[in-house]
Image 1 (spheres, rainbow, N blue to C red):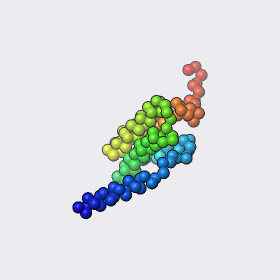
Image 2: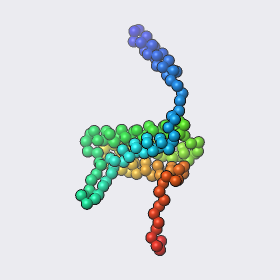
Image 3: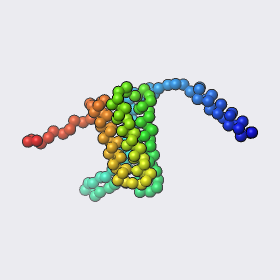
Image 4: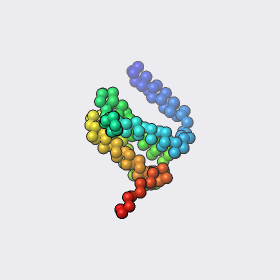
Length: 157
């Protein structure tokens, strides 16, 4: 009986606390949100799949330790959860193309998290590439000025 009473009191306290929260939207402009929140978190994830070659040889950001894999999964899950902010906030654009890009982005972020959980580096790279492709596709649709134009083709093409 004491446990049931405590559960009821806890539920009522949570409901009262939730009702007291203001219903505010973020004041951060979407350009700032994308540049400081989305881009930064995507770069954290992509660092785990980076392959770099220079005069000193080849280096990889491939997760090695359990902590590395856990961090890669956390980075992917962060992107997945941030996609909900783009769906249900002041950032949402009422356009069917926005929804398509957002769904594809979320699926790629989820695939990235699953790959990290399985410690599957090839799948982690593939999902990371899909995230990047989706970011670029969305930018080309809604903010084409932020994507660099392709380099000019050599003479004769």
